[in-house]
Image (cartoon, rainbow, N blue to C red; front, side, top):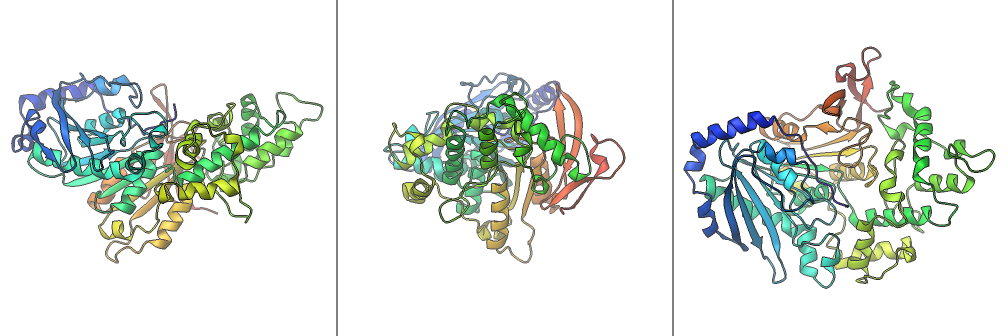
Length: 518
């Protein structure tokens, strides 16, 4: 499955259930000023209609699909909410499904829209549950189709537009109308929270619809999409060029251990994490087998493969098409490199969007010829997000971005590139010059997982910034194993990085400070 949706931790099931029962016994005055859940079925939407509206009892929600469902525990802990399903048709060929979840009691007067993963095609149920459990009214969309890959785009340019940007805006407009009707007032503030495809959706919202949200979280954004997929296919071609060039997944740990041996101590802490991989230089030839192939070394052909993919692909003009893996990411390489074919999310981009040919063979991909074709596909509908976010900043919007340094699916340098471009292209008002933050997460994989501290509360950091004017100077991140926190570490605003103080536990964030990167 090639979809990831950012999953935030929920609170105690018991506490939430008691809160829900208390709310049902004494209805929220905000809800009382609006209409009942049943009445929402008669609500007229600007570009569609409400299909269903029903109160869900505490802990009673069961996801209709396993895709995007996450842990069942998250739903068991949910308080009662009004579940609204709607279909939006901004074009004759549109069929955008959305769900708006409205807490029956305890609404915090805010909206949180949640993003998708991969080619979407499903509602992000687990992310909806996380938002509602925190008191938000929440909304998600399937982006206008119900297929797992990109076949929906073949012969359907309007559906491709819906996926690329229109569905998120349309769902936001509809959600605000539903909220206003149910509670009797519009949301006081609106936030967007997404990672991967959801991260790209977040950036698109800030660029195309700067007034939709007051604060946006964009994690590991899949941007620019066409170049990202070019990189993914190019790496598969390098890995599968010959039978000798393939590096079996069993050797990824061998490479990873050698990288750590070379670079772990650079940040002042021998802790199994590389705080800033840009400070690490690694030559895979140190692993060259001395006497034939073996499990603890690389053959000459494998050394060449690793060396190639650890450098970004360039076209004939020596222009970088997309960044590549950072040192320390090796344990996650199986995601893109361990199979016999490239990542199918990437192949679908060229099959159905670029060439409109379901039989297209990825081995025929040519970096110089086909990347420009991908940029132009659909009249550039899925092109790189415009980094000029002046209108969003002028609206008072705050953009919090993050990316795991060990991301095996989207090269982390892509987020750094966008951050720098946005700072250069955007002209915020003098009254609110501080509008953008980037947090790079050591050892974290794609949106979560990995060896590093991958559990952190970006939503609270954004809230403090947007609502109290307090930009996040650091975010506390944790590594949780079997329900137990085994390590904490501060995440620092780029270009700062965490530096060990020299004494105290390496697993305690209190012993690290955010300092300027060397």
